[in-house]
Every structure is written in structure tokens, then in C-alpha cells.
Amino acid sequence: METLQNIDTFLANYLGLTDSEIQTFKQNMDKLILKKKDCFIEQGKRAAIKGFVNRGCTRTYFTDHNGKENIIFFSFEGSWIGDIESYHSNKPSRITIEAIEDSELLVISKNNFELIQKKMPILNQWYEMSAVKMYSSLFDKLIESKIRSPKDRYEFLIEKHPHIFQRIPLKYISDYLEIEPQSLSRLRKRLSKS
Amino acid sequence: METLQNIDTFLANYLGLTDSEIQTFKQNMDKLILKKKDCFIEQGKRAAIKGFVNRGCTRTYFTDHNGKENIIFFSFEGSWIGDIESYHSNKPSRITIEAIEDSELLVISKNNFELIQKKMPILNQWYEMSAVKMYSSLFDKLIESKIRSPKDRYEFLIEKHPHIFQRIPLKYISDYLEIEPQSLSRLRKRLSKS
Image (cartoon, rainbow over all chains, first blue to last red; front, side, top):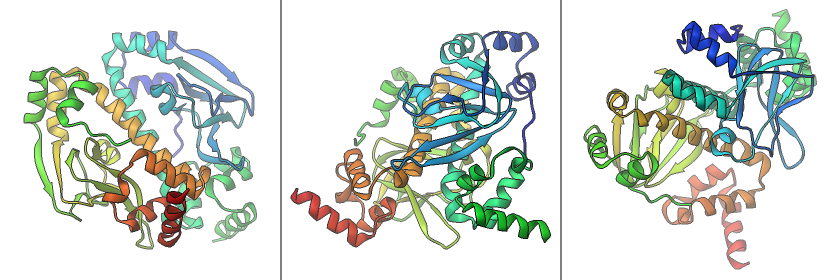
């Protein structure tokens, strides 16, 4: 299911911040404009930052030793993006996050987050929830080619992101699903008729 | 690298608990004896528990729709094991954790953990660290067949767990590495000569 929440809704509903806490949180964020194909996080560089997708969408991928980009997931409005591994370990990131459309992020640095975390202990649970979410997305990706047929993978993706074909180029979806573009087109046609 | 810490060392060094806090923590744990092939967590069942490997070792795997067991990682003495996804979401687990040797775990239920967490806010960081570690292990597994050759995968595993061949049956290592048992034996012979 597409998440369509904005940052205020997220902070209020998900974390239970008060209006004044939301203001403090937002004062510690910066707006970041990404043109299509700009990177928010680059494989090999440190990433002590996290971002909220205000507008647009991104793909998270890693490049393998053959230079192939392997897409792990897509993120749309209302999602947090970042690399929890590099964020916590301070090691170079193993992923790249790139804008698929011109996008607007609200970003917060690790330093700023830790500063306000001291004032709002409720933010401690943020990690717990977001790390588990990232873990689940990764697990989905790890197992899906082993537990789901191409058709099931396609249907699972559509259920999660009903409008994905309107926004994401077919080649990215095909990469993500690990289905050849031609087979994916055939599959779509077949399923749209049934 | 093999971790060989015991529960006291872990709680003191990793979390910074005082002696009396360590006692409180341990009073909320139970000893769980697993015979070889007993399960700590079973795919399809809820798992609001986490365990510390005091003695023995386990394999974490998921069973795909062909009934094949796919090993994600091995855990030895000094490691925490569990399913952070089921723990937090209260949904059925997507993994199984099974003892490879007769093993002894120290386990703590989610209820007990949350009770002592209220008294020891320092435990909040436990989630952050452990979730990120789980994420990293999963990421290793996800990317390794794409970024590492069989030989590199083998060497990476040996570096992480030097004594793995003394403790884990070849068929599990071969499953984990996604290398046929015969190819793995040949690879070992070749590398031991070089």
C-alpha cells in the first residue's frame, strides 16, 4: 500500500510528538532538492544522514562486481530513506539511493538527530521501528526470488505500490523483480486481460 | 571473527550495565537447553523472545516453496539470536532457528525485557545496535552471491568463523555458501595446498 503521509502526520501519529516537538524536529531538518538521477547516498561514501521523501521517489540499489545495479526497493512520498548500516557504523555505505523523479527530501543529520533525541526520549523508539522496517524490506528482497514465482512477485509489488507502473520505468521494475523486460510486458498483458 | 564473550561481558562492555543491573537482567532470563536439531524459533510461529548463545551453535534459515531450507547465517557462543521482525510486529516468524549442536541459551521474553527496560533506559540502545547488526548480516547474505565469487565467499566465511569446519556439517556450509558440496571440498583442498 502506498504511504501518503507528510512529515507532520508521521511525527504526530507514528511517534506521538506534540506540535511544539514537531516544530523543533522540523527546525533541525533541511530541504534537499534532487534532480532525476541525483544521488542522496552513494555506495562507498559515508552516510550519517536520513531523509524523508516529501515529493518524488527513489530507488535503493547496490552495484555488484560486474557493474550491474541490483535494486533492493523503491521509496515514495511518506517514506524514510537512508542507510542504517553506514549511519550507525560510520563505515562507507554499501548502497546507493538515487532519485527516479525530481524529488524533494527533508533531511536530518545524525548530529542534529542526536541533539533533539536528548530532548525527546520518545525518539529512541524511532530506531527500533525504522531498523525493523528496513530489515523487513531487505528480508522481502532476499526471499522473494526463492519463495515467489515471477507472477506472485509482480502481484505482490502491485499490491504494495498500485501506481508503480505510472511512475517507475519498466527497466527498473524488471531489474527489481528479476524478470526480463519482455517477460514482464507479456505478464502484464496477460494479467490485465484476466 | 568468532565472538567468545559471555553474557556478563556483553552486558558490561557492550551496554555499560553496572554489576547490579547485570544481576537484574540475568534474573529475568531463563536457561533453555536445546538438543541438536531442536528449534528455538519456528517459521510460522510468533517469536516474542530473544536468546543469547551460551554454549553451542545454531543455523537461521527459511524454507522456500519447494521445501528447500535456505541458511541465512550461523550463530556461535556470544551471539544474540531471535527474529526482530516477529518480535516487534507480533506476526508469525519467517525464519527458523535450529540448534546444530546440543546448545544452551539464556533467553529473555519480550515482556521481561520491556519491564527491565523501564528501569534501565540504557537498554534502549540495545535495539538500535542489534537491529543494525541483524540488518548487516542479512545484507551480507543478500549481496554475497552477487558480489563475491565462490572462492571469496568461502574465504570471507573462514575469516568470520575460523573454526566453522570443525563445528558445522559440510552440507550446511555448502547450503549457506550456495556452492555444491563436491565443489566446496575441491575448493578447500585447493586452497589448503596453496
